[in-house]
View (cartoon, rainbow, N blue to C red):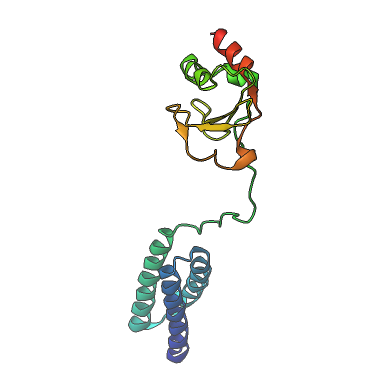
Length: 184
């Protein structure tokens, strides 16, 4: 092959290799793969046209460079897809009903019931977050007062359950809690 044309082809492949190297540094898998394929195709075209020892050595050196880039590209991981942060999905909290209340442990219910203070008009609402084993709860007494409790220790809390009405179950009467406890 004519030396000037060979040099131009070799330099074009070297420029592509430099671009690939930059894209690998930026961890851009798709772009580096795309340019790699162009560089490899140009090298395949140039390889059989090499004449003489210098051109053959030059093509061999390009081959080593291209193979090295191929190995570096293979180590890149595909780009992560961005999480769809704009779309908020509704939390799938616990749905409390009388059956679910009946599944609470007897130990939990034995500690909850005294907190209702023998007020048969009192109601209890459970938190809808967590696993539903020892849920936080709030008791509304018949006089209108509300006290919030930690489910793990049954100690009164200073502030209401987080999340407002969306994270609190429907109210359950003193009678429902008493029945759930006596079933066990």
